[in-house]
Amino acid sequence: MANLSSALYAILSVTLVLGIMIFVHEWGHFMAAKLAGVRVDVFSFGFGPRLFGVKRGDTDYRLSALPFGGYVRMAGDNPIEERTGADYEFLSKPRWVRVLIACAGPAMNLLLAFFIFWGIFWIMGTPADDYLRTPAQVAAVQQTSAAENSTAVNDIAAGDQIIAVDGKKTPTWEKVYTQVKDTRPGAPVAITILRNGSEQILQGTMPTPPATVESLFGYPLLSPVTDEVGIGTPADRAGLHDGDKIISMDGTPIVTWGQLVDRVRHSDGRPIHFMVQRGQQTVPIEIAPVQAMGGDGNTVWQVGVSPKIKEDFERQGLLPSAKLAGLQTAIGIRQIGTVLGGLFTGKVKIRELQSVVGIARASGRAAKRGPLDLVLFMAVISLNLGLLNLLPIPILDGGHVLLLAIEGILRRDLSLAVKERFVQVGLVFLLGISAFVIYSDIFKLVQSH
Image 1 (cartoon, helix red, strand yellow):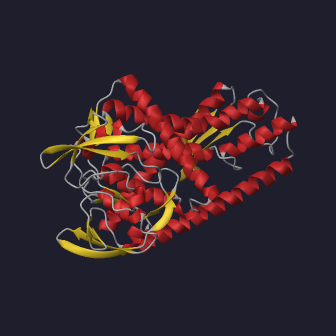
Image 2 (cartoon, helix red, strand yellow):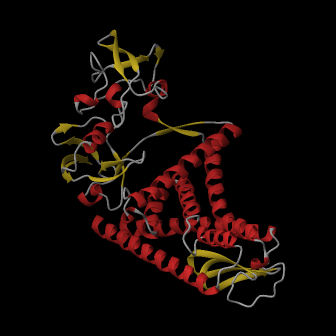
Image 3 (tube, rainbow, N blue to C red):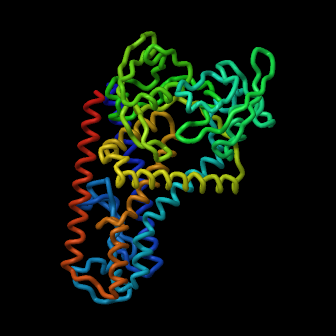
């Protein structure tokens, strides 16, 4: 019953998420075409046979049999079919107008993500990790090589409380990180700590990447409890579950999440013996990390699990929320761009991408966590859909723009044979990629069970 419930959650949530994304995307094309004076014959949600719909003016608004997709059919948009040359036909419009119509769909997806972020930041507030707003008491120190330890004398120790950095008071971990945010690597840092009731000043230097600021300050207390185990990741295959508490790794007690990350990153791929608390049971699990691209674009050792973090929300005004939403949208675009770039450099493998199967499972998890998580997930998917459609691959919007750009440079239309071959190559390429990713997602799903 639990598996059936999870499957229903996944199906309903992915239908909702992709349905809204597709509607917004096609609505962008539709509105751009209307504004450009192009007659729209069909606005379809889904592909295949028409189930039902309604005709308003020149447009048939319909629901088709296959819900995962959609399209806008414009008058005169098929170069194979006979055209009248009327001004309302798509191919009668200047190339720059056709480019704008092609880009309008992805643009609407990017705008949707922005407005979701804006609404959340304005109504709910900006999220902040709860543990960063606690007193800056060191829960543990980084166990890495001496070369990466940036504290020069009287090393930070577990139990120390950081009360000032470079003379500026730091009552919370958030203030500690803010204080050194713009400090250049190698610059001296004075850390005032409270140890056994007395103040001490430690002299250190800002670490140079790949070392992190944790080598200077130690780790804040973030309970080593898993929130989400990635589908098909080493942690998933080894049997780690959401909600497991990490007790030890290779016999070393783990008191804060940063220790887990540190030991995995410096594992060199060697299997790690975990002891986890699951309810009233203590379960031994062995996980072999794999190399994958981290959030900063660098390849690091990972096991595919994230921590359970309690968040507080700080209310913002309308305009500050819009500014933060723009920043969040830009960060999301950059992260997706990093992943796409990683596909070409080899840092990201195609099997790490998610098909509709993986998206369904992820959306189901988000729905179970609550409406806010599902809406945020929707924003992320909207960003992905918008950017992926701008890739210069035939049959995608970016492929249409590329074709129009080539014709613009040549100052003539390409032959129908060339256009057909262009589309065929793109279709075969996308079908091949999609089939491989779907197979990988199903294989991960089977492995996790």
